[in-house]
Image (cartoon, one colour):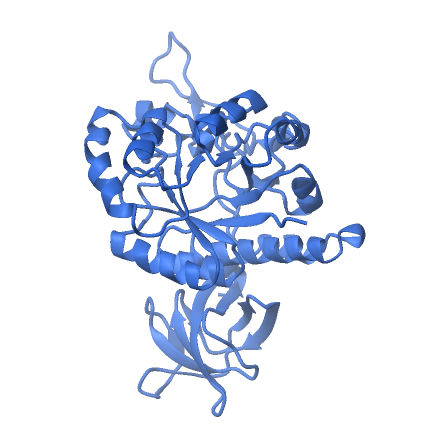
Length: 410
């Protein structure tokens, strides 16, 4: 059985490494131009080279986003950019614009090309058209049900790969083609600078009463008209695989390494469990519990089970649910002393009850009984960003393991 690919977001080189260590088969990244996440740190050419080398050493793939909707002035820079990235060793580029695709075919025909969800592919005829032009993979529009995905798979050649989003933020606009941000904030979502006005709170103004703002309230906090819940399909791994998808994609290049690692790890375990014994596969509720330990909105299955209803919108708040805080990463562990070297990512102190997670297991609970600075001097609190400290841990831990704490315990 061909195994489905688990594709993870990587907003920078550190996130790429964590995504791969925690189980991603491939990652998608953005350069400093031509990607739809301009606010992410993104990758310099040197970071791209390092990321591709890191991934390929572990048998994983790296895809580069070129999926803005370019204007004339953007095309001016495209040739030099392609000349710089075409020999890095990328496994594919992701684009939505036919002109950009034509340019790639002319100047870097050896690059594999994937069609972005921004191209709004919702049917098998469109998928076949793009495949005939040389597209290797179509990233399907989010607005498709299981039945529609299965029909596209049945009516397209097996040489065409199909990819679909299975987890992360949902856009209020059709496949992300939005003009709200440009209109309201002067920031073009289709060129990577979305201000997310769909998450803002709105009031009603009557035409003859300018300046009078009438609240439209579900609660005392107001109502958020356009605010979608987050997509989560971990409960439907068998259905996703049986629909014929080749790649399951996680959204979130703006997210933290803790988010990326935690989400990837849960989906990795669910996918592996299915392939180990498809006939007797059972969903493990702990996978969903893990997803709830990262910052998230309430969850929805999006369009997979049919058209969403009002139940799939979040009218009361645009805030994230955050029950756990990511507080540090393991850099090293000394078996003789039992001391773990930690890089702090959030304030914590002695006496705190924490959880340690790694790629191989869910978590191990631990109390911070003591901690030491880099000079070996005892300290009571680690308040500084990326402060290097040492703490005793009774179980061996490894680099890339993470520390988290229940937010209410801080």
